[in-house]
Image 1 (cartoon, rainbow, N blue to C red):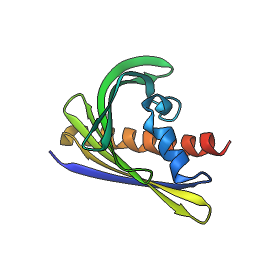
Image 2: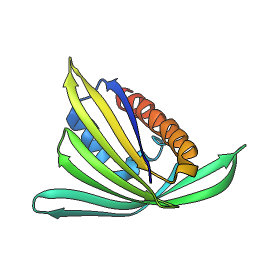
Image 3: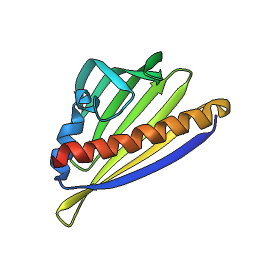
Image 4: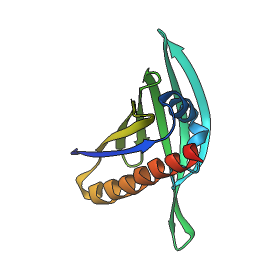
Length: 150
């Protein structure tokens, strides 16, 4: 299956530590990612000094306000370089995998937040999946900025 890469960034007036800590809790993604309606079965683990969190989410795809489809997603985040980087792997139906890396770099009293997403999906779904992912991730960063700066 082909791999598609999306990259987004924004500057937020908050420390890398504050942003990192906020995003360590999967529940905090509700209200950031517009499709996300539920976060369930949150399980934190630590192995060899590396903390991870596995969780399930539900995305609601709507059309004129009506929910057409609820997509169950399984995710696992590895906190690779606190408070500067973490990596999430997302598994979604039908055999869609997203590798999302968040980077938090201090710059002039703010933090540059970068998100790099690699999407593996069937070619026939690629346009829909990449368009939805781009909308969701752009909104996530805008909502994170608004939340953390208010």
